[in-house]
Length: 486
Image (tube, rainbow, N blue to C red; front, side):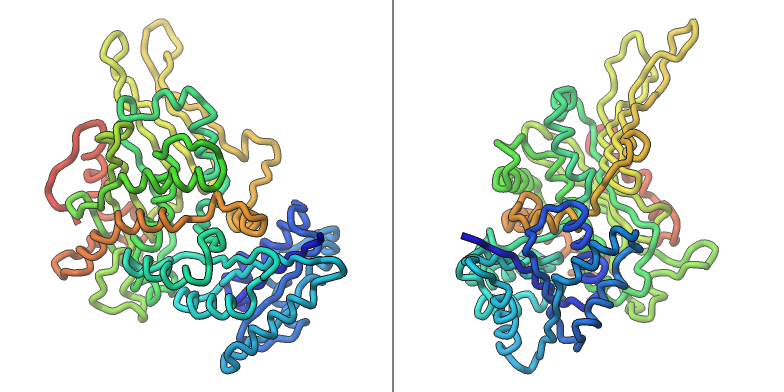
């Protein structure tokens, strides 16, 4: 029994398809050799393009190639074709898509696996998925839709999206992409935790004082303010990316690295996180830079003058179980800050008083981007005749330590997972529901009253005034002030 595979890119002319999907698929295929040799790729989009124009569109999105890669890329392009979607033709265009896919079945092949990547606005997911199920579902072979965040804008809308997809697509036919799960250092969290007993021995509230999970960006909204104003930093980053990092940091050891075991443990620990409290939250919005070279958020003409949209948020979460009892998880994300950086910083408790005094706190830092690294801050004796300690650092920076590190980009890794049926890094419906339960009350509280206004901070600064004190109030001591901080 033979089988073949087809990838259909819906929205093939768009920015996401060009920069993330089409650009990565040829590299994944030819440099790693893990995709079906008979794989075909179909671009499907309302924009009218000939086959040659579609190939040119692909070429413009791919990084410069060596002579060897050019031959590989040419072979890749021979697998590609394009269909113009007639939006007024109802199911007819999708029926044409079906016939194109069936035309790729050769000889004794009886099964064809079909992957539908929806590089589309989320508002189109339901209608398009219904047409795909009706006209293009593989009766003999696997079918799969691949969608990307946002998966709703609060708990109810997320559940509604699931209810509308559910009649046509089973959970194991929906691959939900959170591109952070494809990043090399994110994939390294579980091997780091469970492959090193020295970390497992201190991975609890008896040894850890606090955990900071942060994702900051040095750029602002860069002309996307109108879109961002309807989303905000909490929905854009914290509810998805930071929650996945929190889950991987706090989950119990799974029975295996199989997809269901991993996803069940992540969902289980997220259900133990109570809704975030406005009393332990700070929000901010950037204004123009101190030198006036960079505009403020509301200087964007597409942003309302009275916008209260948060471009920065810091909030504190807790995991209500014995392992993490009382440990604050300080979540921080923002735009137009002084640096672009994503990291998990685990700070351990003080050493016991005794012969050694004034020692620094041990810290384990997992740098996700840029410059992937794992650093362990520890204490050692300062060379000399006196017994004094000095803070030192064990540093595993990939670019310095690993010879010629071949680090795949996030989309490359996730697309390979999707196309090969590995759902380990697909966000499950249970994870989504649990994470929205954590953030929806906070979002409704902030958006439901005009009394809560974001604190201003200058473009390129470290964040709103008072941020340092806010973070410090949860470090190396009991829970900070009950006073509302917004």
